[in-house]
Image (cartoon, rainbow, N blue to C red; front, top):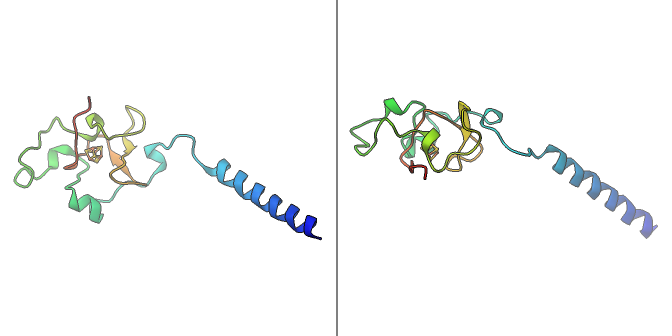
Length: 107
Ligand code: SF4
């Protein structure tokens, strides 16, 4: 009886583990994620915009229009993708032409 219970647990654990592995993305792409909303509290806090040309210059005087997510050190995903993951906004995609105050020049 004990052997049967252990086997069932092992089976369930194996199925659950295989399901998790099977559903994990090998490489998350920005288009797989929801686009971050401009009214998302994190986006608001960091002054995120989808278009770097729409940054509030009064609020962010050090911003320059050549600063954008696609040339930020923190951007992830593939070059050329319109929407890409960014660790500053976990689980959301940011626009390649976007910007936020956490921008860091890509080395
Ligand atoms: Fe864009 Fe960089 Fe801000 Fe992420 S940290 S939203 S890539 S500017």
